[in-house]
Length: 586
Image (cartoon, rainbow, N blue to C red; front, side, top):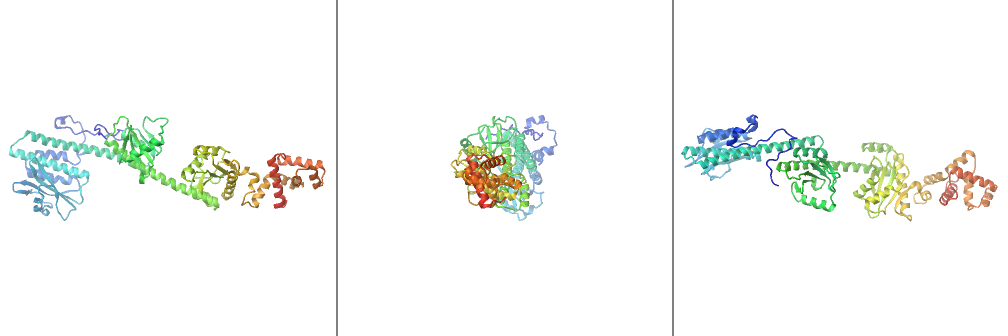
């Protein structure tokens, strides 16, 4: 990407301005009133004047050697000047100097190179060179090699020393070459500009590091990251998920609604950016991918329609992308842990678990298990019970603020939810989301405590089974609405039979017990006689009008229509179960 030297980081972050170092002809126009130590932390500007004003070559080398330690954890071991007879050690700097092998220095053949010193891990002979070749050496040692900044500072010192030696040699020989002097001045100005540029870059990079470090220390968050990036660059920043959906925006120009790219276009763009090592320009955007451990978790971008971004903008975007990758990875890990704990809880509830333990675990997950719940079982042919199908089921059943507890059992998804599904509304929503209407849903009766969850799970399975074996296999079936089918399937016990009888005959049984009547027996004999009044009256040894009166009371007390086919069937089965299996118990 092309560099724009005039581009700076946004003034929202720092009020400090970066002033390019002027040339000699413009030095009187500089108005920066800050202390010289702040402008020249390593003292190279002051040293350059001293070196260039010095006429004695030995003194120039000594000045440079004394300044080595000011640049970092370095030590000047020895200095040499080139003479007609070879190399001559510069006197007057004896700290550690006897350890340098002068013969080894001659073997360098005018090149820079390593010098063996037992006390130090890194030892290097820096050649001092001018237009005529080698002028001398400065031997520098350290416990470790210099970093990029240290190498730049040492090289700058060597360059300034070389320039001073060349100038001194020119003065001594009284051959004042105007072109050579101009070149030396240019080298000096270049070195000074490099110092200013380096100082500016270090300041900007430090600003980026400190700003994003504060964001991370305060807990990060996508909105905090985009806001910090906007303040650092002055460009609108945004975060999208891997599908192109907007997650966060900071800065002006936010589109409403956010444009959604087609899956094909999105995939093509992601492949294009993934091929590069850093941020990539795609039309009006600079894009970086958050891919911790190789998994794409998000997209960080800067809106840059005028292409004003420079290397500092790229630096800020790259570092913000690393912070975003850490944030998204942390969020994913937390989500996975929560999901695993929620699934473990509902799995234990379906099998039966300690009630107090269930309440405590649910509370830790932010789920109120003390409320009324329903068990919902969903099966959709052609859809494996994977994460995507599970998410679709959760989305379609999100009728309340509380998230359902969700798990998978084979090819089915099981939910424990506070909201009772609204007839076929959930089925319609899920069919729309999956694009196919052929699934079935079974819903239990209400569950008021954790120990009732296993029973409700069996009810939901029974409702699902009845739906899948009916003529209309697609849709939602509630266990409450099964009627006779509640007791026809396998696995039914006495409690289920009693529940069925109570549902259909409970009011009549209670009435008989309270008033010492025989309405249930009358209804049973009436059905046994096929609804024939005369036969039923004879079997009960009552008058026909008495039978009619009793049947009328049965209709009134039970609120059942004896002419309805389904009601007659359920009532007849209920009376048979009451008499044969339950022994006519009241």
